[in-house]
Every structure is written in C-alpha cells, then in structure tokens.
Length: 391
Image: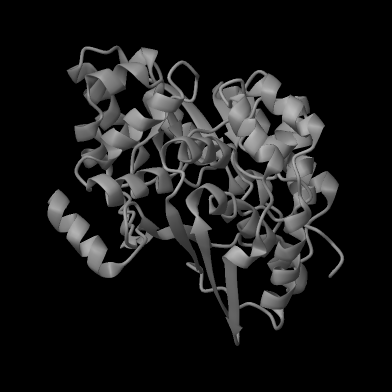
C-alpha cells in the first residue's frame, strides 16, 4: 500500500483546472488562495489515514509533464498557449502547501499558497482520498466484467435517448483502475454519443479531446475582488479575454444562484457563450429559465446548449432530455455514476476555496448554489452575500 502511487501523471486532473490555471497566471498571478476539505458525508476515516494520504501527496512532488503529454496538449488544446505550456512543463506540486491533521476518525485539511499553484491540488487529492478510503476500509469492488457490463448497459440507454454524454467522474472515482476501465468501454462503445472526458490524463491515453470550462472558484474569487452583484459578469468577461475564439464557452450558472447569474448574463455574453452549465437545483425549472432568458434576447434556444452535470444517472438524463427535446440542445456530464458504481455508496466530500487575497488582505469567499446544502464558506459572509443579493 505505502509504495503505491494513486496519481501517476500531472495530467490526472480535471481539464477545467488547467484552463483556470492558465487564466489565473495571465490575469491574477499574485493572488493567494486557501482551500478546505469538507466531509459532507460525515465519513469515518480509519487509523493512520492522514499519514498514508500524506505519503501519497509527498510522492506527487515528483510528477512532471512529459514531452509526449506536452505534444498532446499542443494538438488537442490549441487555446492553451506556449507560455502556459512552458509554465506547466516546469510546474511541480509542493506538498508543503498542504496541512493535514487527523483526530480520531476525523480529517482536517487546508491548502494555502499562490492561487496559480494551489489550483491543481483539489481534484487529485479527492481522487486519492476516495481510493484510499475504499482500500483501507476493505471495500472490495465488483468484478471488472461486471463494471464493463454496467457501463455498456448505461450506454445502451443513452444511445436510445440519443443524448450526448461526457465523463466527469475523476474526483469521486472508486479507483484509478475502475476509471480507466470505464473510459476504455466508453471510448470503444460510446461514439457518436460519447463526447469526451474531463480527465486530461485519460484523454491523452485514449487520444480524445478533454472537455470542461471553469469551476465555481473562478466566480467566487471574482466576488471577493469585484463584489457579489457583478461577479458572474466580470468572471465571464475575463474568461472571454483569455479564450475569446475557442470553444470553451459554457458559463457556470449557480455560484450565486441562477436568478443572479441570469441578471449578469447579458445579451452580449448570451450570444457569445455556447451555452450554460447546470450544477444544482431543479433541472427542469432551470431549463425553463434558460429558454425564457434566450428568448428575451431574441436568441433561438435551439442554437444554444445546456450542459447538465448534477449527480446524473440514466433515469434523470431521460427525464431532462425528454423535457428539453426540440426546445434547447443538451449534453450531460456524468460523474460518479460512471466511475463509482461498484456496489458501495460513493463518498460525499468536497474541497472548496475558502479565502483569497485579491488586494492586500485575506477575504472569505463563498458559494451559494441553488440548494442550501451545496453552499460553502464563512457563515457571516454567506449571510452578507444573501443580504446584498436579496436572496
């Protein structure tokens, strides 16, 4: 166990972490950030868990972008310019940026440092925690054949629905091995409905284009710097400053609730962005709201897309796609239901940015979401945000 590295490539991460890292380097190179591990599922961690986790994180310091990986990024991600790829070539994880502490069955963890550096930690740490947890608690997975069969069965349903699906399951996967097996099946059996994976390492292995745009922390930081009311708009404008002509055009819609997002999503932004990503709240209400929003600006919704990515399975996808049919285009980012459907409950854990230094001092950052249990951050700041936004 102690000699086994769960993360073996610098690219074993979600694509949007790299696109955000590039934007941070260019626009906010001196900003510092703090992140915190949140055990939403109140999981009990076995003895020495923090010690073994620390050993895995220490090994990540030796990961480097290979020449082959750099060539892959140049080919498949042309919007990541050479200055960023040169930065990534020299980048190495620094485990000193992480503080881990275990008391009994509880784990506390903080990450702190330059935002441009610490931004890459979240996803691989969560993958490691998930895989270690199942290993150390003795949770044995179903057979590889069964995993392949289950994936094929889901694919059959998605093909019947004729929906576009992507794989978004890195952070809460059962294991690296299961993740790879699922993607092997998706690559082989999925086309033309399988549109890619958010995992850059596996996208490289299977020669597919990685998918994704930006995460909540991008907008959370903008709220700390520019204020809650205009955070969505400035975050989107800054995104376009970096990725103007590329296809990284999905706007994340629920950092400060969807109604606030739509107030910020003006005609210019609504026209330029390919579509919006739904990550919390009732998907049908959101689809109605999005269609109405586009129509208000005389934009035909059928020329736009909603990417749904909130805890999906074939049943939910069938329900959402049947409502949206002939009204607005859809695609679906399926996460844990692909990479952790092996007979055990998946973990309910997150790592979120909690503070940033946009100017000279630390400011708490918060996310409100469309559902209360997904809100994160300092309670007083959440209260203030709701007051300012009249929520």
